[in-house]
Amino acid sequence: MPSNESAARELQDRAVLWSIGEISATDVVAGACEALVDGLDSPALRTLAACTRKEAIYDVPELLPPALHELGLTFYPFDGVAGREAAARALAARMLAGELSPRELAFRIHQHFGHQLPLAERLAALDDEYDTLEYGDRTPAQLDADVRAEALRLVQHPDRATA
Image 1: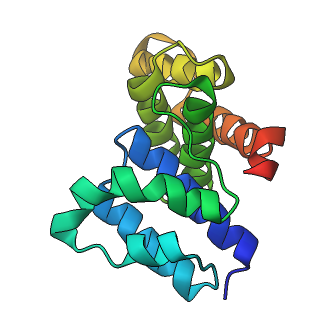
Image 2 (image 1 turned 180 degrees about the horizontal axis):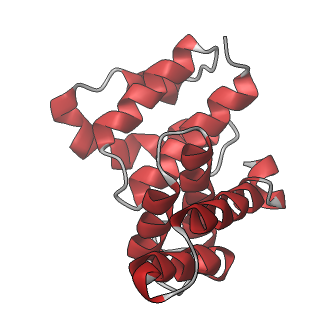
């Protein structure tokens, strides 16, 4: 069974991934259910977990901020730098967990943030390199290794430890 800390991190990650459109509101509700099973609990978390698939798209924006607050977690504004950085770290964690390939991580970072997020700019640049592999002297394996190194750096970033 995951610790409360890892359950909280997973819920926090789902919140930021939802905020950038990477996952759906129903994925957030599923995360709330998993958090309850893993030992997190609060009145707002229970309400969030009780949402139906139909209700999720309408209720998650209203229920998620108080659920995170009651658990001592942060709800990042949709347009803030801190939220985008948290989302980049969450995507990096997903890649390191095997849920995304290195190429997918670089693409998604580039797609969501372009070259406008200094914390993850190297990943956007690596996405550009994937697009020009046939013209360079690097191999896909070398780029994959660079993406993994960047993902590890993001996950080990000091702000990740406090999320």
